[in-house]
Structures are given as structure tokens and as C-alpha cells.
Length: 197
Ligand SMILES: Cc1cc2nc3c(=O)[nH]c(=O)nc-3n(C[C@H](O)[C@H](O)[C@H](O)COP(=O)(O)O)c2cc1C
Image (cartoon, rainbow, N blue to C red; front, side, top):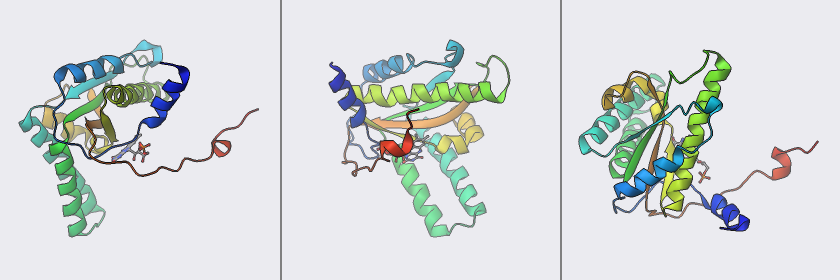
């Protein structure tokens, strides 16, 4: 791959939320996760943990946990019932239909000293593994989407999937073969987001 190809490849990644039903072979998921683990991490502590949710019952438990918490939060915020119901059913459908579903966690014990800065670096490192998942999936001809819901329901997610106490859910990544074309995206102009000194 030339440099130009790599730039094109990186620029081609988009969030895709609808997939055809084709399943993804385990070997593909395994390659994606193996590549994810090549991400850099502060002090090389490799805080990321991956949960591949395949089992239909586990998926249902995860979907129920996430949407129950989402509905309770929306209710507390005074959202209209119709909006709560449509959000919940859309979320459940997305979890149900995603050909691959990977929960991205960090192990909270993989930290050198308990300072806010070290915690941020721990989370940043985990996010880099998440980015590697998106890109490695793309390299396999898949598209994917990063979903933040588990962050709002850490305890519920951990309980629903019976995860170790020290695994803190950070995000959920869904992947599959695309069944939609992402809309054109407007990027902020480079001269507004960078300075040269
Ligand atoms: C930290 C983070 C959280 C996100 N959470 C969600 C989410 O909960 N639901 C969703 O549909 N997309 C989510 N996204 C995807 C963004 O909406 C998407 O990356 C953004 O709109 C830019 O579009 P692109 O990925 O196609 O370039 C998230 C992305 C990031 C990086």
C-alpha cells in the first residue's frame, strides 16, 4: 500500500448504522481484535478489553439493560413517552440486527497511579484500540459504528453480560457489510482547527 492509498483508506472510514444480514466469520472478528490490540497505550498498559457478544440471549440481555436505563434517564429528563418508545425500539433493533457487536471496555486496574491524568490516559488508550477496531473492520470490507450507550449504563451492562468487576464498559462497536450509503460529511476547514507556530 502506498502512502496515498493509506490516506485514501483512512479518509474512507464512515459511520454506518445499517447492515445486510450476512454474518461475519469468527476468523474475521479475531483478526480485527488482534489488530486492535496493536494500538499504542500509556505505559504500554494495554487497558482495553473486548467482549464479542454473539450469543442471542446475551444480546437480548444487553439490549434490555441498555434500553431500560435509557428509558429511565429519558423519563427523568421529562422526554415524551412516544419519543422514549421510538428511541428504545430503534436501539433494540440496532443491537438485534448488528452482524457483529463488540463491547469495548477498559480494565480499571491497569493504571499505574490513581490520578485524573492517568485515568484520562487509560481511557484515551482504550479509545485508540476502538479506533483500530473501526479501521481493521474497514480493512476486512466491513463498516462499523461507535455507540456510546454503554457509557451511560456501565453497571447495567456489566451485570447483563456478567463481566468482571474491573471491566468498565466504554463503548459498543457494531459492524457488518453496509446496507446504506453515509451522507456527505462536511469537515471543519483545516485552517480553523490547526495552527502552525
Ligand atoms: C466517542 C464517540 C461516540 C459516538 N456515539 C455514537 C452513538 O451513540 N450513536 C451513533 O449513532 N453514533 C455515534 N458516534 C458516531 C458519530 O456520530 C460519527 O463518528 C460522527 O457523526 C462523524 O461521522 P463519521 O464517523 O461518518 O465520520 C460516536 C462517535 C464517537 C467517536
